[in-house]
View 1 (cartoon, helix red, strand yellow):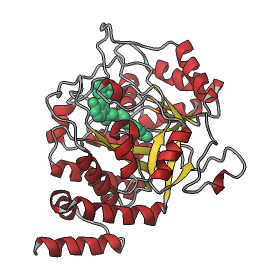
View 2 (cartoon, rainbow, N blue to C red; view 1 turned 60 degrees about the horizontal axis):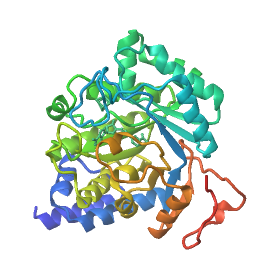
View 3 (cartoon, helix red, strand yellow; view 1 turned 60 degrees about the vertical axis):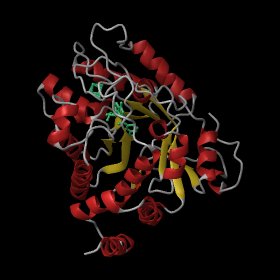
Length: 378
Ligand code: V47
Ligand code: SF4
């Protein structure tokens, strides 16, 4: 089959809502031009989410950066005795949660390092004290790597731990720690932490308990195209079985201050290609997120026409990407986010973590493209 016949066949499948296989994914990755990819991804995006672009009002909390692991792509972690290392007290954590509520946040995104000395109860207590003080905040807490660590610390079954956390106030699980599943890459990036099977099993168990989660892929370090396609299809396979994933977030590697600082950060074209490819291949994921902190505001805006239907949130206090060289602002106001979405020709909708629309004032639903918004400032 010639290249153009193959592309035509794939386009027809995508437009008919049919699933692509590994070879077709690889063909698109290597051969399709940016506009073909964008057109197909946008078709899938609009079929699933129309012209809507979601955002939420959230705050990040990284209770510690001290970590037993040494992932080579990570600029955030610190050794136990390092001057850069920190661990927040309960008081500092509660202060951050009070700040989140005062800003009108509906979500706290809580992830961090695996501290050498802190017991399981320390992590559980973080969720408990925040939930007790601010029961309306949705707590999206701890990546699969952290959950794997909790199971190693306690030697208890994961589902039991998740139940315990849910009773303490856990709402859902973020998508971090997935990196690249394929062992040829994973063994180099992060040798000792939860492997692909463990990561997928943890999300499966969460889904079986009715806990929703997200998924990510770290691209642009040492992986090859086939590793990216393999990663996406493993996620699609689990989603077929559980339906528990809400959002996929492609994460571009940021090299500054990491052991891979000789590698160049992916360019905007790569970012858009991966965004589009993810939307096309992950036909069973409801949402694809253009995480503006990682992409930069301009590329995130364009990504809303290359498959993405979500910009994440106001964020505030982001450390992981800023430690690794991100020059995006520390936060965006909801007014900024709504304006960015409208400029991209999309309809801004504030969502909560589980994608319910948040209506803050009477009539907000009426806001449409072109209107200048003064509402929703927090
Ligand atoms: O697990 C760490 C990645 C993840 C670097 O679920 C890096 O809604 C690039 O998962 N360059 C944490 N990536 C962030 C994350 C996330 C972000 C936004 C929303 C959600 C969600 C999840 O960041 C880590 C790791 O995969 N990461 N260091 C780096 N230098
Ligand atoms: Fe630790 Fe997470 Fe950084 Fe790996 S990515 S070193 S697990 S903080």
